[in-house]
Length: 473
Image 1 (cartoon, one colour):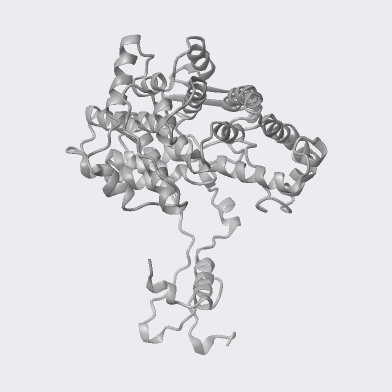
Image 2: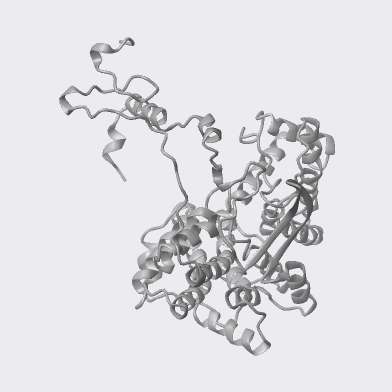
């Protein structure tokens, strides 16, 4: 789409951007001077206590005498350890995502009859509104599925006969609807992208109302609609582990911030999607995949410890990879010794990689996990760093034949459950709009009549200097 701004010369744009940067850059010393907790983080890296929740606990350290002491990571949904949930579902050979969604929304484990009814309601609710696929997805394809998810969720507002009411009953109805429909929006958006951007055939399969979420996803993205029970169970595991991660993560906090304003469900969930799209949050699994590709290109044997270590050192030195100096998939804001999600996925990834002939790929990730702390220690950084969930999730998706376009959207499919639970908790117990403080550090300026203004402001301090007083011209 053409725009006027595209006619502005590159030099003019660079000049304008230089001015924007100059007058928006805040002196880093000012943050210390005013004791600002940037990123809502305390000086020791822990998060600022901004609220309370009964939904989830994320544990990776404990404090003693002001010192942060590492412990094995724990992820607890409504008081129940994630390992117990996963083990229970695997022992009984059943899907668990629907059970987890119930647990997060209602606060208790469902009975068999409750779970059966809930699963049926979700399956029956997957159908999108009439003409929604044609009008909202096919007519406006997007190169990024997360963008399409956000726009489509916002569009559902127009199809809701009661979109703005924020009673628990109405928000629960909307939450269940989104849990059911977001997977289908994702699948259809991907198929439309295949046709419009990859020039490949697209397949819009009708909904099978007998399937669970993991089955529905695999069926909808595959041309032949076929998948094995083992594949569906592995994807279901990923959905369980991604469903929730506490109130302080960026996307959940964004959802709660919007909820606190009294806005509608669609706006609040769309905010969560926009946050999750970012490479520092849900988009991190794509960054792991990109990093792995760089390693493939930079070493002759991805299972050779020495070669991998040398390349990781280059990544840290900003000499390789995306030149960010970051080893993606390693480190977490809370977890120190281990991320329980990564521990679970690593075990399943190792087992499945042997079956599908991708064990070398698994071995590479294992080497990254093992070598990164050693390389950091050699550079003088002894901070506890563990593999996070993103290190192994991409490999599992790859082994399942899921395209990279859907890595982060699948995170969204699962996290709608957690966002919805936090939205209802915020509505029920919040009461106050979330409004942190920002201190202004701008300098006073006098108003200058239009006729006396010049094209540029001189002086880094932001004060206007009349042209006759300028010394740089």
